[in-house]
Image (cartoon, rainbow, N blue to C red; front, side):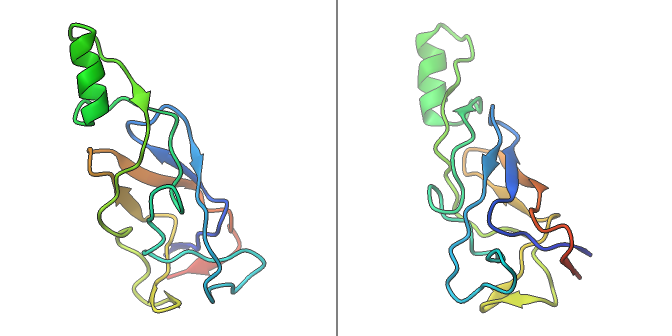
Length: 128
């Protein structure tokens, strides 16, 4: 059981240096005054905005900057690299044709960061 996630939800990446906000495009998904998210709202720079600077050593730009700084970890601008949908999503509630996104869902960045929802922006809509 969790809370539905709406546009405006606050996000954080385990390797990001700043929080971000989720954008949810309406696409026939408006069930409340804010569009509700589903597990496919995972598009970089559309739904998931950057988290300030990235500190993940497996990010190629961070690795290059760190190598140039003789091994001193050098954060670089975050550009989310997302290849899979949010997981797990709600097993019983569909938004559009995909499972609803709830506040316990996680999204994995291809560089190794774990993106989680810190504020779903819809604390009154409870879903299973």
